[in-house]
Image (tube, rainbow, N blue to C red; front, side, top):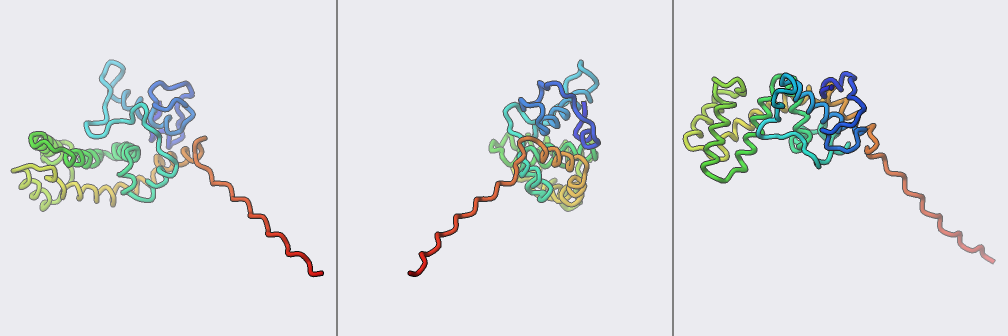
Length: 225
């Protein structure tokens, strides 16, 4: 089964029905992409006897019943990084791209910070903050994100009494890094270009609206007698 990156190189998924896709029509290009990504993630864990690799605690894969993004939404991802990051489907595709660049920890950290900011229970805030610190800030973590010394010192001070906004400065720095560094490559990548092209050619893609019929000409005035 092909991954999204393989689809961009011209590999096509099998035409047989796919029970893992949330879309009942396997001719749907987006459903093919999601199905390919799910199966690739499962197979990467070493075979059917292994537990399938999940999408992490902060951004699950598309679930049954999730609507595919529209062509307009997919095209907007290439026009604005903010729009890409506001779209759940866009974040998933961008995360796949970052995984291929070995920088998936950046979006995972950003998502973890978003989850922390929605937490209201003080005990849960402290627990999640320490989880984020150990996973993405600690120099001992294999998923450490790249922060400058000033921001790192700010985070260390904030960790004395964690709040939902403990990592705000660090989150902004990583968001800016993804915007300036990874996003331009994503927009020009075969993965995104192929996805946009496949969506544009799918049966559900929007077509230009037909031109409105011309208004009838007013009747000519009667001739003078």
